[in-house]
Amino acid sequence: MLKRFALLTLAIVLAVALLPQLADNSSTAVAQDEEVWCGTDEEVTVTLIAGSVGQEGEIARQQLDRWAEVCPNVSVDLVARPDSATETLGQYQQFFEAESSEIDVYQIDVIWPGILAEHLVDLNEYLDEEVVEAHFPAIIQNNTVDGRLVGIPWFTDAGLLYYRTDLLEKYELDPPETWTELEEAARTIQEGERAEGNEDFWGFVWQGNAYEGLTCDALEWQFSSGGGEIITPDGVIEVNNPETIAIFEQASGWVGDISPEGVTTFMEEDARGVWQAGNAAFMRNWPYAYSLGQAEDSAIAGLFDVKELPGAEPGMSAATLGGWQLAVSRYSENVEPAVALAAFLASPEEQKMRAIDGSYNPTIADLYEDEDILEAAPFFGSLYDVFINAVPRPSTVAAEQYNDVSQLYYTAVHSILTGEADAQTAMEDLELQLADLGFEFPEE
Image 1 (cartoon, helix red, strand yellow):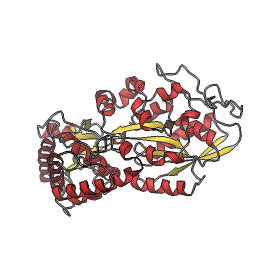
Image 2: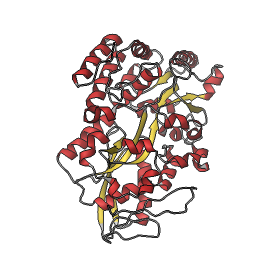
Image 3: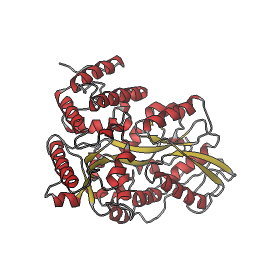
Image 4: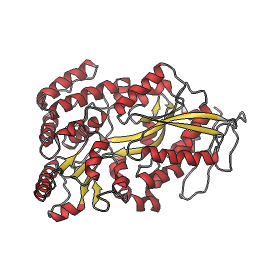
């Protein structure tokens, strides 16, 4: 099949970088300069819906300013999605059910390709193979549904443990390798800081609200404790086992002890707010919080570092795979410039800028060797294995049922954290609920 959208190989700052460029065999696309193609030579406006967590919205606007310099004929309206991924998916589904042309480019979670694929353009019809192959193969595979590439990777993610280096030194502690070590270190530091007058200090903050973020946290607890996955790639339910029950009971004990009672309402920014104010020893969050924590106006700049999350035993760490893609709606009235915009935003140069300015993990392997990026975010190099070996949620096997699976999972875990149910009962009930969706019981 002839490609209406081709990309030219360029020599840029990165040793092997390729800059996506758009071309149209029907000659409707005209180059705006020698490097970037814009999908059309007409005056059009496309709408992008994207996140605003942390400095995400600000960085997206900076990207759009650069886009405007090379493609001034294609204006972009930026719409903020809800902070909650769960609420975002509901909003997107309303647009798609109405076959709305209001949004052209969607920022979609790594777990949504199977849910939203029927509403999205096949980017294989527009993107040069070299551009697609520059991204991590696992993410491209994740974004490919029935042979159709429905999202170009924008950035990837994995859960990390943030820790106060100054406080570990003060209390003569090592970075924790196990959940029990974290619990003990958090309690020691919390008691010490409160004794010195900071009554607002907590040992450990994380995402405990009943939403997709809790699915991510809980899967890390489960997998790192030997409890397996929520559902295996073969469709077998793995939630009801002693290891999972034990770690969920342990986590419930953190609430009101080393973590605030309100942690069961926390999302990413709630946890970061406590952490960045200097009122927590440890935090579980995504890489985006690193650059914000190191900003000049941060109370903890230069006083923290990141590492892999703990496990039940040393070496059993697990990080949930996150990340976001850019997808183009089938109902868009400006498909080609929308694809052009998505390709530009996900290009090597733009991913490099996002990595430096916002510590957003690139989806292009070569960028993890870029000196400018490693200077801004050294952990991209030291924790590279964490990012490439992150644990996926069961979005592939669950497909269009994934949202139901995740909601049942985080609701069950939340009930444990709030004391509404004990872990054994909650996991037994969850196993039955997942079986009702058609997934298999494990063999006895």
